Image (cartoon, rainbow, N blue to C red; front, side):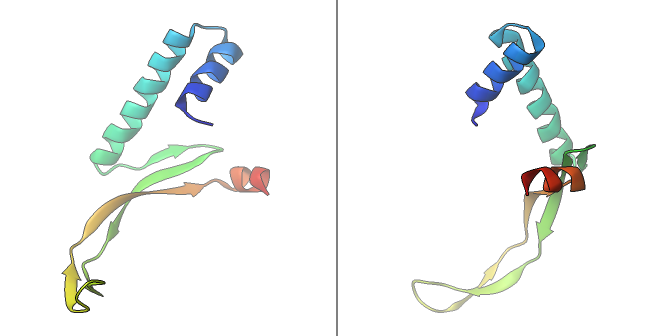
Length: 90
């Protein structure tokens, strides 16, 4: 399912226009993104938790030259599904 499919499904389920459904989804995604940018986690009961994870600085090997390089610390987004979502997907 992509965003367009989601917009159509929400519009049909709720009984609103596709334009309104897309606007609501865009606002939701924007709020989730803003919270993650601010370092907050986003918990959706019965679905899961989106949270920022930090990968510590580490030493790696360059695939081109084979020399050791330092890979800087990075932030990424992680998702941990709720137990009910895990049980549904089994």
